[in-house]
Amino acid sequence: MENVISNNLIHRKQQETEQKQFVEEVGLLFETIGFPRMAGRVFGWLLISNPPHQSPGELANILQASKGSISTMTRLLEQIGLIERVSLPGHRRDYFRIKLNAWSEMSKRRLDQITAFRKLAERGLDLMKGEAPHLNERLQEMHDIHAFFEAELPRMIDRWQEYRTSQTSSGSDRLEDDRSVSPLSPHTF
Amino acid sequence: MENVISNNLIHRKQQETEQKQFVEEVGLLFETIGFPRMAGRVFGWLLISNPPHQSPGELANILQASKGSISTMTRLLEQIGLIERVSLPGHRRDYFRIKLNAWSEMSKRRLDQITAFRKLAERGLDLMKGEAPHLNERLQEMHDIHAFFEAELPRMIDRWQEYRTSQTSSGSDRLEDDRSVSPLSPHTF
DNA sequence: CTTTTTGTTCAATATGTATTGAACGTTTTG
DNA sequence: CAAAACGTTCAATACATATTGAACAAAAAG
Figure 1 (cartoon, rainbow over the protein chains, first blue to last red):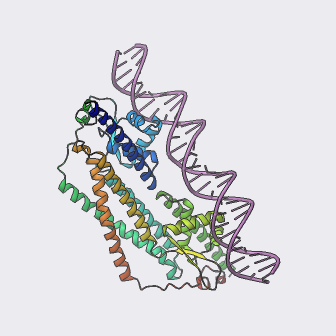
Figure 2 (cartoon, rainbow over the protein chains, first blue to last red):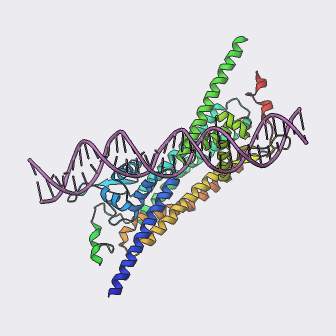
Figure 3 (cartoon, each protein chain N blue to C red):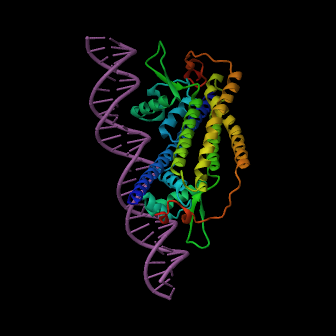
């Protein structure tokens, strides 16, 4: 029995380490797409947290970051549309959780970038009016490929949405406190 | 006659300004996708330069950057696959120019990012084994959408390649000195 | 109502990275 | 072959921005 408990403790500690590693990797990945690392950490923790909604204080504790940093990053993630603020009737002020359509928002951002590239290519082509035609090739290719993606990406997203909605039995929007049934919560031990 | 010349000068000066603005905007756009601004400037100038190939020295002059900076950025852009080094038999050492398939390389990079997200979602799901199923939803969605894009993006790129190759009458790979026929070159005046 | 807890804002700091400049090596030119 | 021009490397610097911490505001608890 003693053995079982200590095994549980060991296993739990290991899982915490793995969670921190996971959070850190999300942070690094977010950096590669142009977000602050801390924003990635917040998002990463919200991906695996139990319950899925977390207060600013909880985030600051678990991520070992200042409250100010958390505030800045949650604001950023909220503006972008990756997380949302939820307030429960009984409980205290407010929590953050990942938005259901977070990744569609990401795609929209990506689409905006592609549009920016297409427009910039057009500006470039304007500059080259009157030049020898083969001098335009570079900009023409840049324009065409982005125009192509600009048209195709929304269709891809649509197909994804169809595929997804046809599968999912729509979950309720109501917020439950998952702590009471979680295998990770104190009552397990 | 005097008038014509001065009009030409004014027009030329204006175009130079617009070129610089263009280069600067490419720099800013590159920053939004996680590249150094100066890399964007180099790429931006290579998009509109005449001739399309430019020496490190020319780049340093026109972009008002140090030789060191140019060297670093060209190396970066070359590694990524956006530009290539070309050396001409008669002329001096080597030049840089934009690769024909530069944007396919960009797409490959994008695909790598998507793969990274998909894999990270899988790691997260591993961490959540044994948890209540609804705690997995966030990670499952993250996984599925990235797996979807991971499969679809290459098909989109293929379709683009088909479309493109069916149109273009393949240009020669030989390098010509466009200065001799350029409207922008000194002999115009 | 007072006290304690919690969240936000913003100026100051720390940190990472882009950029420079000098020293070095290499190639071309006279 | 000598001299000049050019390109690269790398340590030092400048710069931008992520992050903190203290002061403030707002809410919850006692």
